Image: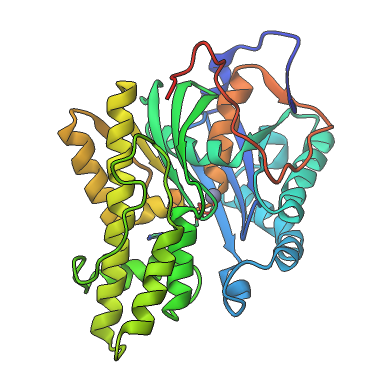
Length: 362
Ligand code: KG4
Ligand code: ZN
């Protein structure tokens, strides 16, 4: 357990006051990001330095290159975040950093920077689970939002249905058994020669295509599970590519539309299943794939049909960014949590679970 409780009881209210500035750092994959968030909900700056151009020619993220690039970018990105927020370092009240899961070399850059700043400033710092950050992008933009809630987190590394029992208490009730949804988008894009990252490119192609043009598998359909499986989709697309006599722009957009429809169908139906099973009406969407317009539309409609409400961050807060980390960190700081100097990067970190007796069971 990396996080520890502070001895004294801080006044939680002070952290939600616009005078409290949290500096967030995010370096778990291929974005170097720093943000200043006031009172957990007001984004004063959110600088995202993307490495996409660096990794594009390799068709995916190269871990060593990502770590080196974070090292080069972290100081200028923090400086820019402070400048845009019109804040000086001594006005920062606390520091929050993603410490896992992710690429270990990449995470270490953020964790070391957070510790260095905390030591120099004499301010508290807190390690945040990267997926908790994604989930809190919703709390960041919807201050009125309160648990319990169900969150569908769909990114390049995760496809999880998470029951949020209370702030900071999670229970993963469904997860992918193989590829993450974003990974499936990236792999299919690669097969189709659409480059990296695949999600936005596949979505753009899908807009012109027919979602029923080609049959695609809906894995685990009809099974009594909240889990997902997306690896079969990549195989199905690969087979179709081989079988298709010619690859014109029409077949490309039809393939993308059919693939995207299959992913969205499964994500939507599992989320509705989880709502019914857990009796939850408040649903959140998060992670890079949450930027997908078709998923946003279809899930919103499905949740409304169940009498629920879907919350989702704007697209820019769906993909990796430090503002979501600062928000999640502020909620933890407000509960009196602090990380110790032993905080380390944890590449396969698990989400902090709700106590077994009190969480939803599924
Ligand atoms: O959350 P994120 O920035 O990084 C991880 O934590 O993984 O998510 C990146 C993933 C990539 O797989 C990317 O292809 C996918 O999110 N993505 C999308 C869209 N925008 C990004 N997938 C589908 N549609 C999009 N518009
Ligand atoms: Zn992410």
